[in-house]
Image 1 (cartoon, rainbow, N blue to C red):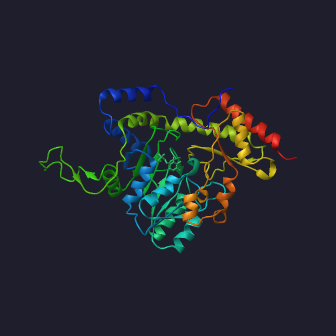
Image 2 (image 1 turned 90 degrees about the vertical axis):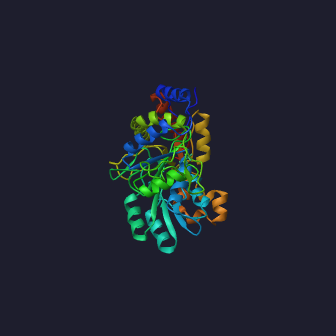
Image 3 (image 1 turned 180 degrees about the horizontal axis):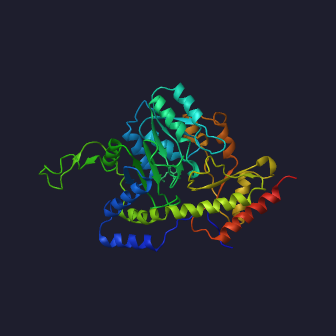
Length: 388
Ligand SMILES: *Cc1c(COP(=O)(O)O)cnc(C)c1O
């Protein structure tokens, strides 16, 4: 039997042809493919600006930088995320303030955010993560951001496409950042996109993603300066996207809705099949919203079974099914735990969930047989180890 991976990128002939064409064109770095990908992305999301970068991590860094986050500032985020969300706060010398999550959505708990805002000065921004592709409670977070005059940077690494109350993620907070890492909902190998409706923020991101170079400083119509001329206005970064990646992105984006529909139908099949098993299936906050279903996460009911989560994962692998854990939370990572004096008691929901969650295979090229086999394997293991 073939091993079913937890995740697999879905690249088809169009992507391959576009990359070959790019290679033959002689233009490898940021160029026409990236420009087209940005234009397409902007209209897909419905935002005013879309700026391609070489990773979501770079994009999150640029987003906070554009907001002026720096030494002495604080940024609120969730512990239940990948370290990239929080590390960019440290890149700028600012300090993270960590919030626990909601027990059902696994998204940042806005009422804990409210507490942190009340008890801390110098908070500059809130960084929610749309966990698994289900939008965080943006309505409440926006309300809090207005009340305390802070900005919102959304980590939308899982959230293409997702909506909150019918509104597309990417058009809600101040800046939103997507990831096109190999296992994300669409991929450019490595890549990311910064999206905003704010002209000043977009201009700053654009300048800082490429060495702080500004080519728009002079008036295009009156200036006599030749096109080799540019000005360096800040010590920027090298975060631009290559045209080979843009070439992939153009075609991946056209498939984003199809891929989402497939992942959603797999998720529905899983949840229907698991109703009688000792697991909690994903809880949907708002059924009318689009859930990107980047990951499908079950929570084992440990008091009803005689194996641990880690043993469950091992048995899944023995049966040829790959899984993952999203996430080992940041309060259990040595750097964050030790430097910020974090412990399990401070984050009861994330701690409880982290001991019990497993992400199952859910990617757009999964066959019916593969989905059936995952269901079968999960059922066999949980039935076998269910307590009487
Ligand atoms: C993947 C991921 C990132 C980082 O994305 P890169 O494009 O690899 O930098 C950040 N946050 C979350 C929640 C992610 O899943």
